[in-house]
Length: 356
Image (cartoon, rainbow, N blue to C red; front, side, top):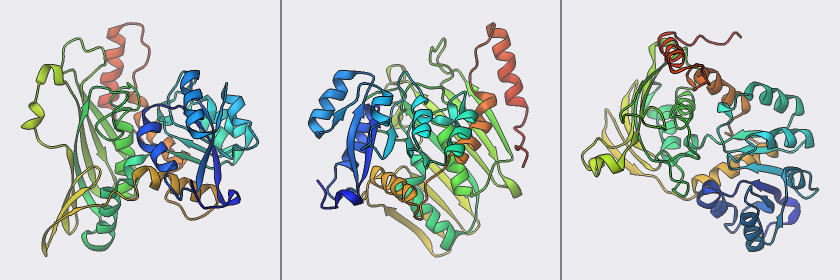
């Protein structure tokens, strides 16, 4: 596996062996030279955990405490939104162990209590805001800092395929079925915060039920995000209905993001293509995919755990997103009329900044 000594390795226990594990983290963690070693795994399907443990020559835990409390587990990777939700975060905090959290903790109804638990425990915590670490995003940040100046306007179009548990992680698929305002809406909101390097002063939501009686909820959302000094983002997400619309994607506009800055404009297609224009002309780059997004995420988590310089997002970033999307998350309602009234008020009233 790696030529690094055992002392140099971060030993982790992995909870949730689903799509993100198979597509993003497993290939990165098993790459030669990785400084992170999997020593235990757990999944709500025990047979899956046993099979993976046999392949990795590690321990198949029978429960959350069985994995987290192990002496040879230095940190916990929560990679799947399984039946227990964010309960592993609380257990890891009590055990004093760092946490990497892939599920959208900002959508958990108890996120404020979880944040308090994390802060009181003092453990390192990293939510997986992967879009921050796409090669095209990192190049965009570099261009803004060196050539193009501050961003002023972002226009985004995301086309989401119907949920596919085994699809590749990224802007075209979800970790698990969720309202669009949560996934990818919450992740896109964080991406805007990262690019603008500022907090929104107002967030508004529009919704459209494109397909009648859609059990998954509105198939389209628009997020209008206002930032200080007149900067803004307008992010559109559409859940693509392949069975009804066929190959309409062949003529629809390409998914991507337009960024208008003080001294130029940029077009990016997650996760590796970027075009930009300034006074010197038009430029196009295809960013290298080595290291992969998974490797980059793992590297920043490792740095965070070791107290080194890291770009890792924090629980405060998750809280900032949670507070902005809270008015728009679906809530149990007594009847459809009251639910609609709640949505209407939420869309009409601006989200006020949290008190300092």
